Length: 238
Image (tube, rainbow, N blue to C red; front, side, top):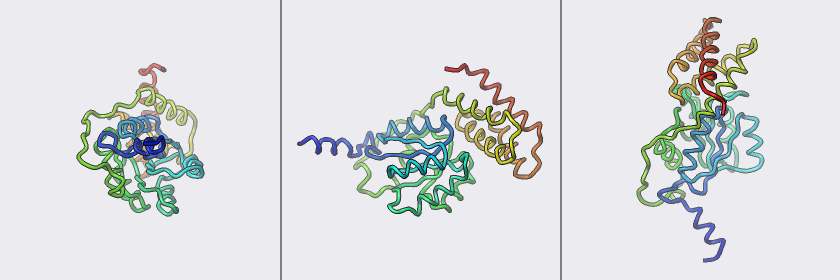
């Protein structure tokens, strides 16, 4: 077997690495969620590229065409549904386009925009991640035979969680317009869900729902800000 044939063989998906040969573009502003996806891709054999906003994703797509795109529904420069619609209509089309969010109601918007499927946060199940991708690939792109799947959940880097908290704190520091408050509350709700931080998740949800109803109080925003600061102080910088 020559050198090129050997390289090609190594890129054929196997039972242990069923996503071998695939490149996954993750469009996600949370470093914590991205680290979870990095670990899921690593265990599955896929390569990962990251964009933290719609504009960054568009720059990536000018250079290469990924096999899979996973798009968070709440991004700093717009709705992930906008990017999903673009990806679903481009030619050639990315093989698998998935929406992603901690908000279960976001699934309908992702599918309506053209997504092939949806990933719900927290992202910690290897089996669910692999099935979401493989079930939407052509049969000849899937590994043959049964696949052993480890049940242990992935554990993202705590330093990434702290980085996300610092990003939210910096954004909340100033008197921000309403759309920024909406974004940060949504960002923190998804982050807290991924980190299984229920008090922070409840506080972020109160702000999000209050904003939607026009009843949010400064006290709610202040409490959310304080909870973020408390967690930053409890987690030493690395």
